[in-house]
Image (cartoon, rainbow, N blue to C red; front, side, top):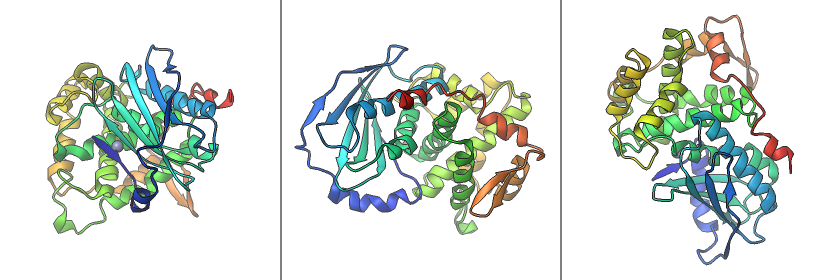
Length: 322
Ligand SMILES: [Zn+2]
């Protein structure tokens, strides 16, 4: 099971436990959502519970499924059960879980007062759907599963018109340092860590470093996305239990050089700490007041731009129809 939180979100969980409606809430089975690739998403929407209409909720589901389908080349599973759990007196979509099975299941905790803007801005559903395209690893390597989803979800949304590119880099710039702000003597790598900042953002930094190296060594022919698509096609969805080293070696073989395995070993089981200040500078990301700005003359600016390219509005149109 992947239980997904991010920085700050965790503080809402204690309150959530008291606010979630009882299991007796009546759910209605709506017509299945059929994606253009034949995927069926069965969604249970509690009747007259949310501030937005069932039609708008369907648009949100379709838009996020569209982004994940676009990233992996196809939606990772043929059939999905999606359950929306209402959270009373909340205007947030704050939490989600994905469970493997014959029909994989995603549960999203949705505030009953959540406005349409919260649905459009929320990362939670896309994050859970991202997990569907990556095999399940042993608990020790949870950081790789969550880091992958933390990195891929916003990129998939940026590339399909659901998230501004600046927002992706701004959050990364703000939160990634939290993964390494620990006593250096206590840093023995990411394997087995429980601190959610290290799990999510340490893992996301692994993905970014790997993405940069792959793009540099292949002159942009391949990317972290290429490697993930290979892993998905060769080793299966999150319904499959796989060995982390096995799938990373397989991806390295596909890419034609060693990148994922050595970086995984370095970040997983040594005290390696990336020089994030240099990384941002090289990528052309600089602080500007409370936000960031891009410096396109930076040596790796072209890679920063390529990570979120090409762009299309293919998935945002689901919202425009409503
Ligand atoms: Zn997750």
